[in-house]
Image (cartoon, rainbow, N blue to C red):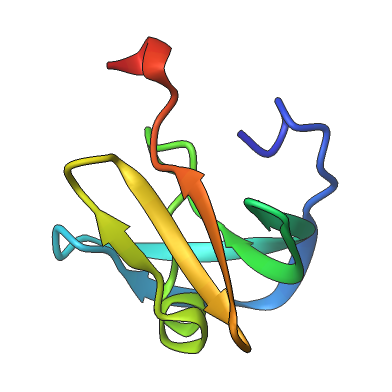
Length: 96
């Protein structure tokens, strides 16, 4: 995904070990600077790069800071900042 998006990974001085939802431990060797867009909300963020078959994985720091609400029926995610809610689809309809 990093290469496909044309992002430039920046190497870390030391690897950071992370544990993903299935319990697997992975090493973060690089990070990228990105703008995360949720609806009309644009967030500048540093993201760790891991090798996975998934397009991206939200990490605990992001989840803790923004506490997104996931609606599994409508397949959307909502993040509220201040009093404004921002919503985006979880998956593209073509992927279903």
